[in-house]
Amino acid sequence: MPPLLNQFSLLHAQTTPFPAWGAMHASFAEQAHLLGIQQPGHSLPVGMDSAAFALAHPALSPIQGHYVSPASWIPLADFSEPLLQAASGIMSVHGRASGRAQPLGVGYLATLTGAMALQATLAAAIGQLRGGTFQQVGVSPLGCGLLGIGQYLAGATAREEREHFLPGRANACLRPPFRSADGAVFELETLDSGPWRCFWESVGIKPDVAGTAWRAFLLRYARAMSPLPAECIEALAHLPYERIQVLAEQAGVAVVPVRTVAQRRQDVDYQRGQGQPWAFSEPAFAPGRPWTASAPTHLPLQGLRVIESCRRIQGPLAGHLLALLGAEVIRLEPPGGDPLRAMPPCADGCSVRFDALNHLKRIQEVDIKSPEGRQLIHELVRESDVFLHNWAPGKAQALMLDAEHLHAVRPQLVYAYAGGWGSAPVTAPGTDFTVQAWSGVADAIATASGTSGGSLFTVLDVLGGVLATLGVTAALLRRSLTGTGVHVESSLLGAADLLIRGNAPPPAGTLSGVYSTRSGLIAIDCQRPEQSRSLATLLEQLAGAACPASLPEQFHALAAAEWEVLLSARGIGACVVTEDLRDLAADPRIAECLGHRAYSFVKSPWSFS
Image (tube, rainbow, N blue to C red; front, side):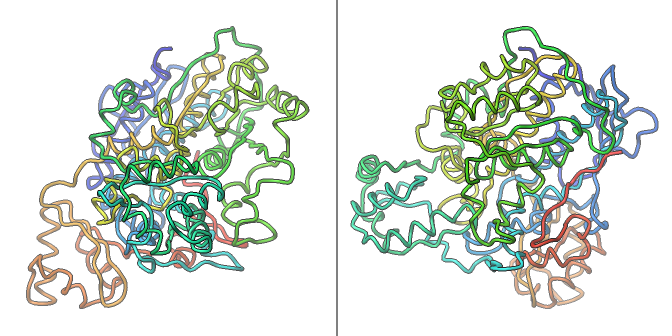
């Protein structure tokens, strides 16, 4: 099919609102290009000088996009990847397993914010085409970052059983990935304790130790840390990689090597698609009757219905974002409910982590393997606009719930699959950490963080969920124009490829880092020479010297909060590093970003008018 949105054009302001964060603008523009949106230049229409960009189409009034900073905490001119990772708590969550609070070392929020800015703008276009009056979109990059750590914030602020995991408290050497005797670095993955225990027994690990390791390994998705017994790490360090592969295969455990970005780019599937994060297709038959609904008034997807059948993070987050955009989301769960509802900490009988991603949805229990369950799904689909799932490969076809079957039920349906590996010929489970390893993301993060592998923060699950939502929104926009349903597929590997492709090194001479102070950590990002000179002058005034080699010692003169005030007043990008996520809930500067009940949750990072 032709490029999805080739009838749309995106105009950019002459002056970027983020002089220190060019990677965000570049990622935003690239994602628009991948969707087929034309970008003729930097010339906004008269009267739009305050906008950062505008989306145009012959059937629309131009939609203006604006970026905002909560309470003007960090001026837009100082927005940068390190400062936003520091402020949003991402450094803290990453630091739980990496040894200390520190940046991920990749342009994560640039890619995430670019996708979320674009999806809100496309959603506003859908709202206009359906009779709404959505002409202004506000996007909070900090709010996007907070959404990324939403499940961890929920765990840290739960009214009961509250978690208190600080960066650097776990041994960064006693965590996945693993290293063999001949130096191979690799991830293990299994979703079942049986193969796990069988594997470790074959390695020579006692059952009780393997059980302790399983609990830590299983909870790494929820806690961003996995403190394993030293016996496990040491046992694999004494075995050659080939032997480990044999034992893992016999036990039913997947082994995935930690590869470099260069290795990933040699893969046939990468070269064929150049890391395209989505695959779109249209059904082979004519569209059905138009689906009518009243014009949206408050949010652009109001009046649209989404059926979601997803587990873990990637798919549920995609459904949550569609709900934040106004869609009615019906979540399908097995009889008795999703088992993850019981994962502590809990409030009112439900896991706060689970609730953070699902509290806006209506729940429908259904046995999708039964004829009655599939009939119920058909009935729901006939009156819905999106069907979203992240089932294992082949399951949809086996259940006759794939795109072909459901488009026969509802020709105008947007059928969305949020998978793991895309078209890559990998047989391991397509989970966050295996995809980090295979794609080169883990190696890039490890190189920046000084660890042996990637982050135990769910980097790709979150980004993959955001990109799945963007794919669905783009498909809904095309459907609004053509009346034809769309089949859209996204994957964690596609998210990884997009992330790495936009990961540019910092400009030469940039002074950027995280420093200990008298109290707390301060993140500093001097992107321009005049900022470095201003910092040097300030340090000379305070300590009588400004030698870069002695910067760590000089910052002990004041507390982090004092440094932030002093440096910001001089136009130097600086931000206190949030180490305890509970501090986010109590910070009045971001009060508008959060809501509170039995735990603190992140509100929508978008506004529409």
